[in-house]
Image (tube, rainbow, N blue to C red; front, side, top):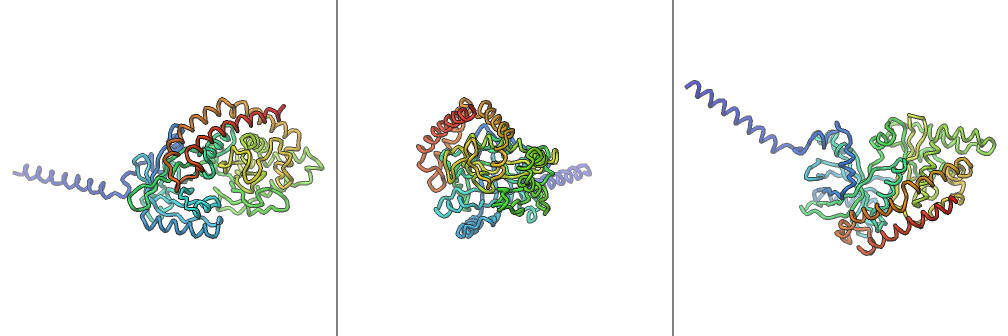
Length: 444
């Protein structure tokens, strides 16, 4: 009898334990949370997040009120073309490969292009994702990551009928050793709160300029880093403002002595009175060879929306390994175009005025010109070759065509439908052949 009572009690205890565990699992607010997918205790999984073998899919789920408020917030900024104020973050459920991430911060990215799209009713807008933006209000998601990544951006391939300019350009920069973001293609679906996912189109996922990028690129992230903006970004004496270099990964610092030092060296009278001393001073604070390498890629593929034409659109990192400020590419969605809002900088760059001293001064020094030409030759013979580029165009055409075909007119930047997409690939190949011919002629 005693044995029976003990057995009955034991069964009861086991039943309560199992029931409690099942209940805990049922009500767990983060049931999909796994260390290798959600925590900040693992290495960044570049192969998973920036998969180069396929187009992945992500789903962003908002409530009706969240989506409405998100539209209203962005609309207010667009109405005044306010590019200085970041849109607000809103909480969403984020899904990838059947796995959920919780209370992920999502917002639009405000710029003139996205404002134009919004005003014309085109919903394919750029997104910024922050996976632990709301950790203060939801302690269950403290230090939440997406396979090791805290922040990512989704770019809508604005003004690009091929949908691949940004990805292809950033890949080419990196392949030649120029610091630039990782990229991959994603189909993006958004549930506006009614339970029905809306296809927002094919996006390029871009690695944000964060300590993660710096560590991958430079094996360190402890140096000062800056986003260059406005007139100061030109390093031109009459427009320079130190405040135009915005601290990024070191946002608590107010010290920009390294930027000031570079400006002082660039504009020193030693450039004309003692060129050798000027060169030594410049090379002691600035990665000149890295910058010339960047120019070789930039001018080969023709990216007009950057230094020499456009204020800003680059980063600088003060690498503690050698003490040099190093150039990091920021934007590349206007690459592979022989014309744009501005004419692309020529291969010789001799037309670039003193308003852009980092080009105007450097290219007129024979040693730097020779080094630049060497990088042009190397890039065109090892990376930017007709054979390699044809393979890339054919590969990516297979990637983007199905996803582009499924885009609706309200969520697309392809001007002319699928026929325009096909024509753009033909034009990109022709552009490559033309550039290779022009590079060869310039170097002869």
